Amino acid sequence: MATAPRYPDLGFRSDAEFFDNLVRPDMAAFKANPGVREGFHLATSLNHMLDWHWHTLHPGVTTKNQPAWSSMRDAMTAACPALAKIQDLCDASKHCGLDRRTVGLAGVGMHLGAGGAGAYGGTTGGYGIGVLAYGDGRPTLRMLNLDGTTAFWAECFAAAFGYWEVLLAARLKGEPGSQ
Image: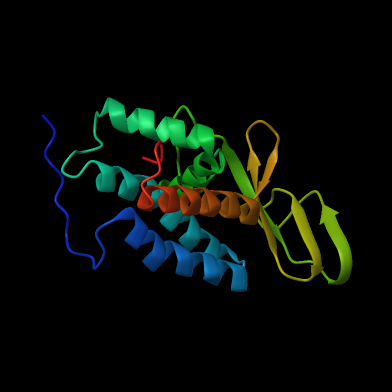
């Protein structure tokens, strides 16, 4: 039988408070400096939102061997596929090797382009998998997926951030189906 989770006092107790205190500042930091460090910090806080959401709605119920947890996570990643991409990115940064059957991430790429308008590209980047940067010279980070598609970190983060903003706002207003 699974042990009930303990909740250390971190200064916030709900998914909405976690979002406001960690995810929002991480998103602001990534927008100000869209680099690898900021990206991994944001990926981690966005990924943790699933756990915070579960424990906000189901206090005292573990996620281990919990079919309702798996169903909720699967439904949320189906509604917002960026959540699954972010989970891969976050888990890869934590565990290095991934053995989940649902892993879609092959690697990441980053390139710093020159100044000026337009896009610059090539076939290899700082991490060995594709490059792309736009004219402002700031790095553009992307994920290369096992199926050959590419997902840009900023677009995944924006989609997941927006998903959580809408879901949390609806729940706080008491809208049906926002659980």
